[in-house]
Image 1 (spheres, rainbow, N blue to C red):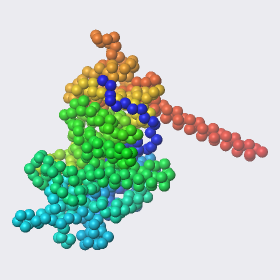
Image 2 (cartoon, one colour):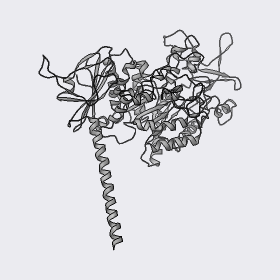
Image 3 (cartoon, one colour):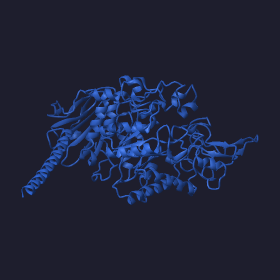
Image 4 (tube, rainbow, N blue to C red):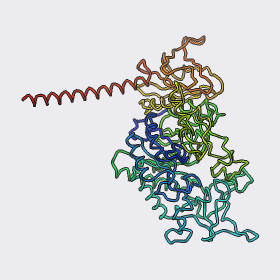
Length: 615
């Protein structure tokens, strides 16, 4: 079967189109001052690690001033740094250090709502003429008993009514998340202007762009009509109780995304430093809607990266090879031409890869993520195969939805397990912090699962991940044609090809059984394959040569054994060495040429100096 998707693209000319974006959850990354909470100086201290790994862009979850009800997604000052994390001076140092290492900084921008502690909200409550309509306010209604009720049946994503009564103002305000996160009113031009100024402030601080949080919640239906019932639950306080046709994905959202894209493009044009400022948008939405974020039918462009969550929402440990192929192809089929695909394998809101697919699948999932065309997004710790810590006690639980669910059900919804501190080594607290108690408990498996151990091991998830990032430098993975096929229900393969360059083939077994794979039709012709990247438990080693074998059905064919949940990245091409070795050789030759030129210039200078002195 030939893939439905196969496209030749020009070489990428912009920094973000083939980047690996590494998401840092600052609170859990590295604590520099011993208070048990990660901070900016901690991130600065670990930037060399990112550079060594090959990361060129990192997205920071919110670092702005916040009461921390939702751990930074409730912002009380969009221009200040949360004191627990540091200061503006620390941020300036972070940007400078990152830039010196070739790493760009992306900030998490939370425009849908502020904190109820923000000055804007306090002034809106007081009906200050400038801020009176900065938020979504509405009168209540009386039931048949004369008791005051919210304006309609809208629910909060975090459970309960999306409306909260304010005694001082004598009105309800809308909050699609916690009651401490009042929704801003984007139908008010003053709000749009205020947020534009926030973006420009941080652009002037040197950031390369923004990840826009919960962007499809920005607008609500003006007449506040009830939403239709979904039929999924009888609980009127559950977010699943209604279909969210009046509070999500309204047409005005696209216009706002396009407005911010224009702001970023204008800024890039006025600052000709070669850096395009980009926008990444978070919206769990229908595929057709997401494609309009890229570009509408009439050609108006919006987000460079409408996040593709299909590896999180649409496949899991029970999916077979056909499911993976389908979810890759459907994104590429619907994506407008001239745009870059993106693939998100994990984030701070969902279980980790090792917990979602199983620890044995970590290497294979990273092989998939990093050999697909376009942009890859990695959540911190996924390069190690970190796992969710599901045994966090009720007393140590801090995630708002989990606390709302109560002691009996908190584990079903808590996001704390995937947010535990980064596991740097087997030292106390995984070398995340010297504190007696960290903000979330460290997963006890840090004693064996940690970066230091994986750096020292002959084979490890980290070394596989690092090898894949190095492989991404190949022209074939930057701009090669792409095809993908299910070879069986258990195994799928993807192929990247580029004229005059090596072909890269990734094979993944998503089943719990060893599979005998026949690649003859898929790879079409070569007599020798070279192993580029193999998993931790693989029977193959990088650099191994694989040759065609005889069979009863034909003279020669390509058959190989693939272990349960294993992946393998292979190459074949014009030269008789691995693609990584060819890339290394090119780098050595380039460095050698630089040295030769330097020596030549030195000799010319020395010869001239000698002649001058002799005369």
